[in-house]
Image 1 (cartoon, rainbow, N blue to C red):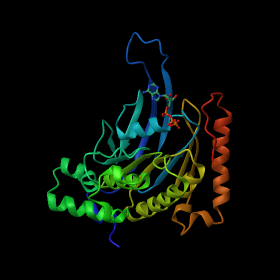
Image 2 (cartoon, protein in one colour; image 1 turned 30 degrees about the vertical axis):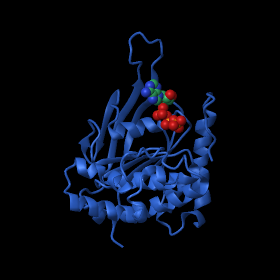
Image 3 (tube, protein in one colour; image 1 turned 30 degrees about the horizontal axis):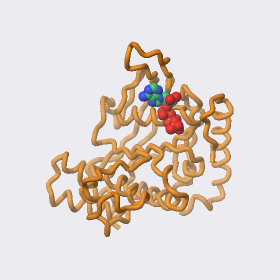
Image 4 (tube, rainbow, N blue to C red; image 1 turned 45 degrees about the horizontal axis):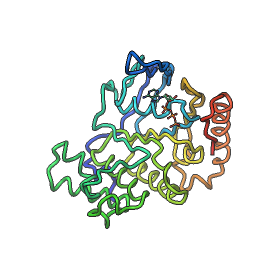
Length: 280
Ligand SMILES: Nc1ncnc2c1ncn2[C@@H]1O[C@H](COP(=O)(O)OP(=O)(O)OP(=O)(O)O)[C@@H](O)[C@H]1O
């Protein structure tokens, strides 16, 4: 099988991420607003290496998405510094592909053109663009629906297309914000399996935010549990389970799951707000 790195032109190698004292406080945009500032993240320091699959779990509102948005460059930290591949993050860039909970495909473009979009804006010539898109669509199992519009696809197929679109420019890191949360349980399981295969094939770094402890333990070689707001790192654990042929049936799965679930329960129990979501 050709690797996805070949398919994406192998334009980049995976990159690590470094965070130094990263804090973010949301402040009201208008000076007339009476809304109080929200301290979302406080002094996050740490990092992860190239090729790691980093799964971040924690109670609702603890700042998981904020962390991902900062690495994506959609927002700037109030304090601290973030580096991707040794270079400071100053805004969004083609070295970071982002997949959201909703696929956010362009409805006026067919699936192939959606996947080609980033390559077109980067000036990749037509034949190479089409070859890369075709290869990636094959890899995510959408080879035969390339000419269809997004509305003709199921939710799972749309999310596969969104993943192919994010991978097309050959990002050094893939940032995924609860990408499977809106899917039914069966589709979600299949996509988790496919994502693990893609990660193994591409060797790309992944930063993956989820509410599901099972999903995190199935996918993450690095398991991060965040405290309630302001988010800090409560647990940072390495795991080899995603390299196993079938992580779910691996004898270590229950113990790793339990240690992560325990940290999530602790974080949630510490939370007196209503919006704590149950660890699943
Ligand atoms: N643009 C914003 N302005 C003000 N407050 C914000 C903004 N975005 C997020 N927040 C607040 O910052 C905190 C962290 O939000 P964030 O979305 O990062 O949490 P999360 O852990 O991803 O939550 P969830 O699991 O529910 O998606 C929350 O209290 C949220 O209400």
